[in-house]
Image (cartoon, rainbow, N blue to C red; front, side, top):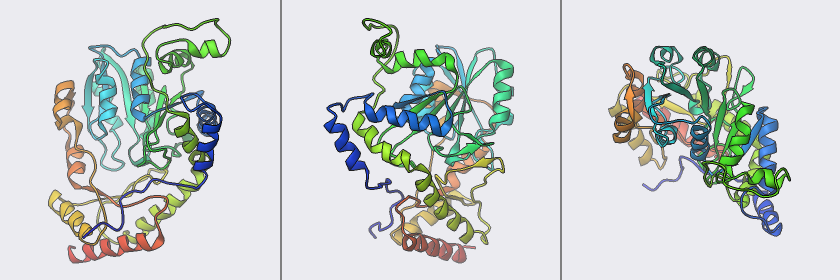
Length: 377
């Protein structure tokens, strides 16, 4: 049966075309144009970060983070295995040894209680991935980082609009990284942002963003010509993409509110069934990025996906653990058991959830899922 309810559809608000046309009319569609600057300003106001820099992807923001922290061969970086490859590859590219630790069984975030026991004199950074838009326990992570003088990078790819103790995710560690890929709440197809919360990184970040030059100073009239200063790359998005993103950032609360209504409706309708559902700690405010269910086995998870597919509903599983991947084995090492990581990878399934999802579409997903639970309880 052909799919009639997609897993995801990128948000579209109707104002994007107008802003793209304005960007074209301005005769500046390369990076760092009018809309890039406007998006940076919105992010700075919304998060309270000292400096926001739009990038062409969250991967780019993570790679900039590795450069800013001067990651070198032999340095170690602690991170969860249950995450996207970019979280790891950004640091492996600089020669870091990746140290994979297990995730928690409730939030599916890296287990902060496992961090301190794997810290060595080679540890340079901790990467906190806010899975499903639910914050890691940042207070404890920062406590460990401060104790051992380790940098903290927030991979907040899924967490735009999420908070931890009333602080915006991405604005808590030294550096934060957002994604605006089409699968995210706020999207421009491909895009991201680096949030710089430690002022000492701002000047160097400008150099990295400008292909290793001091062109930002030149544009501000601080130098009479610009030149190559250090390492950098082409991390800026086109201003047309920024123009598309601008509309979405302006309406982030509206988008996330609609997603939260859908998320809450799922949660309410599956409450009676004894199946593992998302857990939100009291000190976290999430953005309804994802609604998932966790089955008792890989067999039952796959049976559910196939059942939903037969009804025209696209449900998907998520990450294959990095520690068991060819690249993960090459560039990293496992610290301790990965029981939760392996189990979640085999048993989690994500349900359709997107801004434009109709009530009828969600009701069909709920009805079909409930039918499956009742037949397989």
